[in-house]
Amino acid sequence: MSTMHTVKLIKHQRGLGMIQWALVIAIAGFFLLFAFKVVPMYAENRYVEAALRSLEGGGERVEQMTDVEIRKKLTNFYMINNVRSEGPTKNIKILRESEKVLVTVDYETRAPLFYNIDVILTFQNHLDSSRPGQCCRPFIPLNAK
Image 1 (cartoon, rainbow, N blue to C red):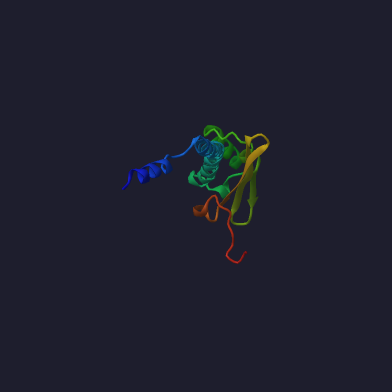
Image 2: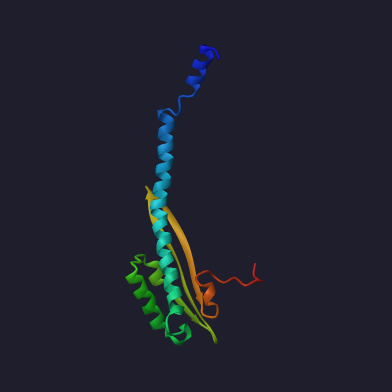
């Protein structure tokens, strides 16, 4: 290869300039900020799911527990595991049917991202005592669309 051709190749292989690096850092910073806001909300919801599972895991069946006992057990679990959002505590709903109990904790949580932009996540956690193995996801019947 000629020296002139080698010099041209070296000029084209310089790498990123200052503006490109600033853009890469800004994009990486945005995704890190987003992750720092969203990951704790998902982690907190894992504790909400674990609290619902703990209702079935104890010695007493959910059908035999009163509404007050169910709420107390969930709020104690939240307090021990540092669930700070108001959503899981305020949105406990208990529906009793003839042979089963449906406990739902549907809530949304928000965190400010920057300026007037917020991240809002919606969670639906359901415990159907007739299907404890399918805990924490809403039950959708096969014939529903």
